[in-house]
Amino acid sequence: MDVSISLVIFLALAAMAIISSLMVVVGRNLFNAAMFLGAYLLVIAGFYFLLSAELVGIMQVFVYVGGVVVVLLFGIMLTSQMINVRLVSALQQRVLTLVVVAALVGLLVSIFSKTSFYYISSAEAPRDSISLIGKLFMTDYVLPFEVISVLLLAALIGAVIIAREEGRQ
Amino acid sequence: MIPLSYYLTLSAILFGIGLIGVLLRKNAIAILFSVEIMLNSANLNLVAFSKYITPSQASGQMFALFVMAIAAAEVAVGLAIILMIYRNMQSIDLDKLNIFKW
Image (cartoon, rainbow over all chains, first blue to last red; front, side, top):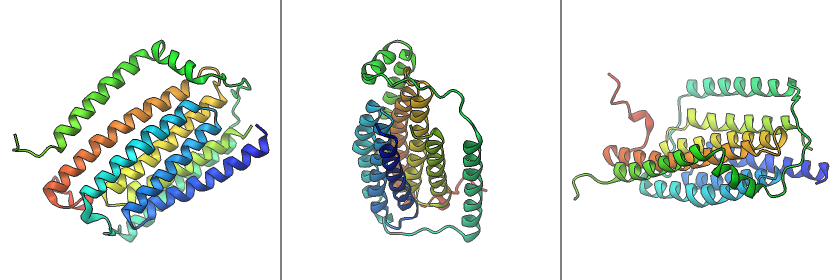
């Protein structure tokens, strides 16, 4: 793709990502925050497509936008008294947080701008990255793959047991 | 190609926004939202490095997929814990969860 076109796409997506994540963090209404979180996750999926990581982008839409946001909406509705309650932190805490976060981000950005990345490869990404990832899952990464499946099963059972009402057989 | 540092800067900024949310929000579900923002910014970093450093091996994409699976498990368990807290205390204000303090 042409560099200037992809740069324009990058900057538009970056602006959308920053705005939607800010709306999640400062928004009053929790329901609106959930909607903006969905928008943020879709924008991140757009970045994955821009980086030619198609499978990761598709999984982002499936798992995050289709799964996590819906589960979080269930959580909001089940604790519905809290939707519009604005809980404000103390001023001291706010100022301290902003200073610390600004220092951290400033440090990271100054490091990134001063580092010259020697290892940048100019090789093209494989055209069929999905079959490459499928092969990697079954060869090099087969142990983490199996461990993840056990972890998901444990999380599933654990979530059911924790959320179940006690004393009802 | 877009310089790699653009992606790194963007994900640092998004991580900072998520960190502000984790530190300042008091609603437990809003804190889960902010954790999701931070996880996604880290994932963006992984995929960007995968594209720029090892485009033919896709190892960063594998890590991003694993992070995604763990994040889904984390949301399920975290939400179950929050529901349990809400049922016991009728509130998900984390500042009220200080019964361990003495």
